[in-house]
Length: 73
Image (cartoon, rainbow, N blue to C red; front, top):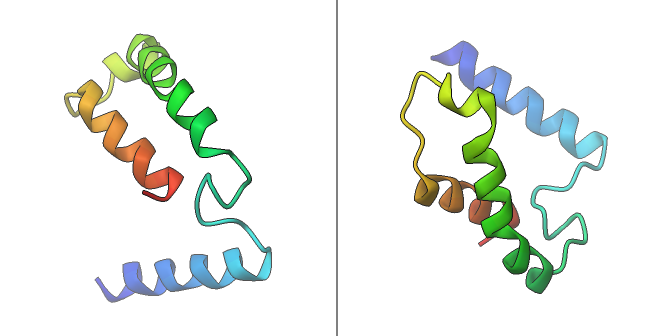
């Protein structure tokens, strides 16, 4: 557990040093464009070959939650 926390902290420090944005909105993606594209992104993810081989069951609503968090909502 301590090793995992140390790794997470190291990644945060590296990300800050490299000035990597935290969210899609910080990358400059406009919210209206994101909202317009989210259903298509989810559809493509659901149809991707890797999704069906995922060890966990993937649901469209779960992907939307993940994408919204990635956007910064």
